[in-house]
Image 1 (spheres, one colour):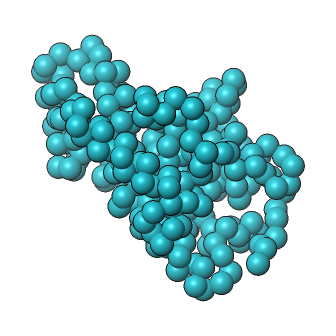
Image 2 (spheres, helix red, strand yellow; image 1 turned 60 degrees about the vertical axis):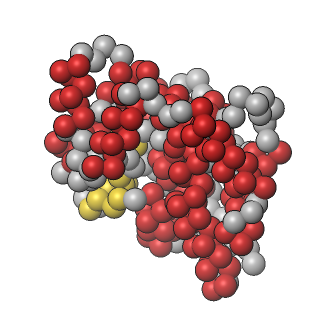
Length: 250
């Protein structure tokens, strides 16, 4: 969809991509979707690296200017599109919000990525010869990501590492850390998607209740991982319709 002001390069299973999609849906911002297949390493293609030299998703392009890093992107969107503000008006509450974002980036994300990568590793390896695997690893632009994919190629995370990750996830869900702010935003299932849940947690955690749209329409949670034709629409690059604006409440 040429000419769109907002373009998102993202991955369907990427936690950070879900965070940005949730912000776009909550604010009702139509966007052009470029869905990358991360298990085919499309994020390492030269044309994408020209936008994001780190070779990771998501990348937002607004008026031909790329913005990277999911937490930076969502603050940018809230500053650039004022009609549906998501940041608190109160300065102290805004400081607490940023504390949670820091906690999310430094603690919660690191708890989530272990089971996420473990789940996706087999598809990434499928059909790769040893020579192709080496070439794929060599194309990864950052050492940290290269080491992580190398670990996946060598068998992935150990049961002990996964147990530790699930323990951190439980801690996030109880609201400990980040001044208790985790309890509020841990309800957002972009951090703890069901398919990566600890096998011992067969039922949804009570903190994972979907965020219901207070306007009575479809919830942002329901838009987050599209069902039926939704995924096809994202793959085809269809922009999503704007939703009615809402006023900031105290």
